[in-house]
Length: 296
Image 1: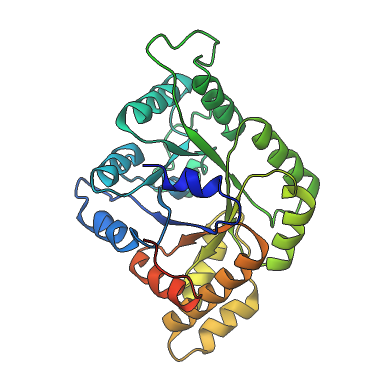
Image 2: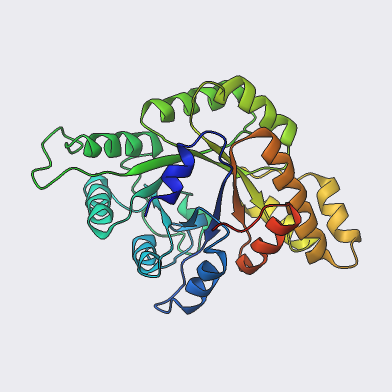
């Protein structure tokens, strides 16, 4: 199963991924139902790894279950909770289980989540995790010792925030991730498409790696305000919040806003990453409204 990798390496292909959160508990019914709805609308489904430092099922386990149902996963791997031994062990496990797509992340700080007294590890951060994957793909561990039982073949990507206020910091981080082996980039939630366009022309141009713009479904003005306040690095313009507040049906307005943003992204970058927390079932409606047809 390599539809996502093929799309990333096919010039002109508009790539669509969607985020699905693992369950909090051992029951996969709801998570699997959401993934099944998206199966023929996206190239792959991105499984979060303790997003916002909130406890959820292991993304490795969820990814395996999706594979068993014919759904291609992108398994997030965050550096917050495991040391370099644990991270490499999980990556070898992913290889053995048939998981190939990895999104390498540093991870949100524990104080943002539901276990604020948990110990953070951060033995690696995203760049070193990418470097470790690159080494493992060439047959070596982090300490340059050979992987005696087979190399990995992992297709690793990284996060990027085109709306970062520090342009030089953004450029430096992007170039480091590129050099460390990132094959695709998934952006944070995008609301400023002029800035995204500038990023694509001045920083991402010439990288030859796809950038997927993060598109978020705001369900109401209150939801948008919560995201703005609680999710690190997110910028939501007041006009978007006002538009949702004035709408007679805020959820339908949120769907319209997301569809408009997909259309804008289509003119600027190589794909979109759809985020509709707890309403992943509405993503097909957003894509329909944006004029994106189901996949075969």
